[in-house]
Image (cartoon, rainbow, N blue to C red; front, top):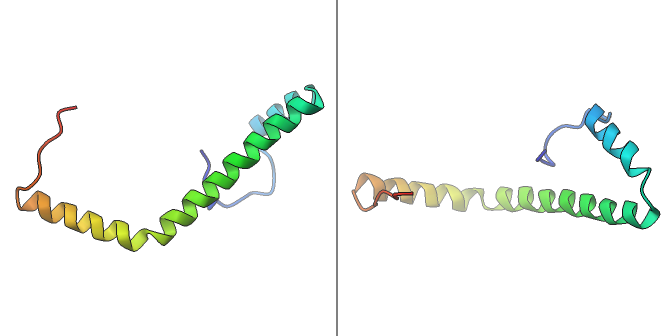
Length: 80
């Protein structure tokens, strides 16, 4: 998924143009349903980006603690 923080070129990609062209052939209710899904996905990406920015220090602290536990031999390998 393209992140909301990526820079926009101001133009649509060929793939997006093809998708929009196909959407135009759908009924109004189908178009609205897909539009709502797309908009919700975009908003969700923005919320995730903002959450990660706000939690940057907490994540760094957790990573430091995890590495300290690893170096101290307090971790176990996961056998996935």
